[in-house]
Amino acid sequence: MRREVHEIGRDSAILNAIKLQGVDAAVVGLAHSDFWIANPPVLQRYGINFETYSTEDFESEMGDNFNQRFTADARPNPTMVFERESLERALRLIRQGRIVTGKVPDFVGTWNLNNPHEGYFELFISRNNNGNVSGTIEDCLGTGDFNGVMADTEFRFLKNYRPDACIKKVDKYDLHYQGKRRGIEVFGEFSIGGGGGDFFYMIQSSQEKPVELAFLGFDAIRDDKIGQGRLF
Image 1 (cartoon, rainbow, N blue to C red):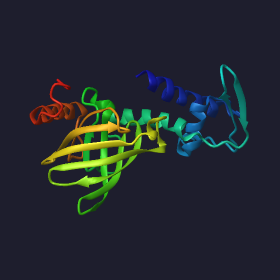
Image 2 (tube, rainbow, N blue to C red; image 1 turned 60 degrees about the vertical axis):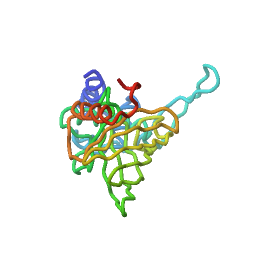
Image 3 (cartoon, one colour; image 1 turned 90 degrees about the horizontal axis):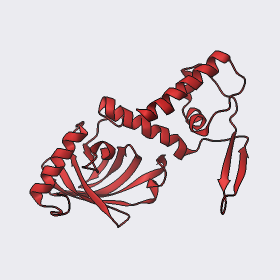
């Protein structure tokens, strides 16, 4: 996987070189350094400790003009850090079949039936008050909070990505999910910011293969005749 080699493999090579050379200071790209500073255990594995962290970045202006910005006591950029976390999530999904580990989801599903790995998600219900539910949804884009209503025949909810725990730009949208519930299955459509959207499918399970979710989703939507003439 090209990104794994370029980002994770290169990351390890740089940290190994820093450790072996015993340098007093290291100058690396922000994509590497922001992730290291935000995740101290990564450095601890190599026996490295950075006492200070400074960054140099560029701010764009009108046209082709850029302003140089230096920060002596810098803090990691959350969106840049999550670009790497997004890759880690995708790799866990491919190799372990899960986005997050250490907790069991109530539902798993996909919001992209044509590319189920891209849309694979895990839904965790933390509160259920007579069918008024809330919790979190984890996917490769980030962590989202949801609130909605779950009944015998429907499950509808509003999802918002957390700005500090998702890739760039997706946090600005409200995602409305309107699903029919049939036994342990939920399927239907979602809209992005009140505009266009697509079909989704999820099932009450702790783990399922994304491709199998797509087949189950296509079957459920076809049998229920949702969006007939648009999907097939």
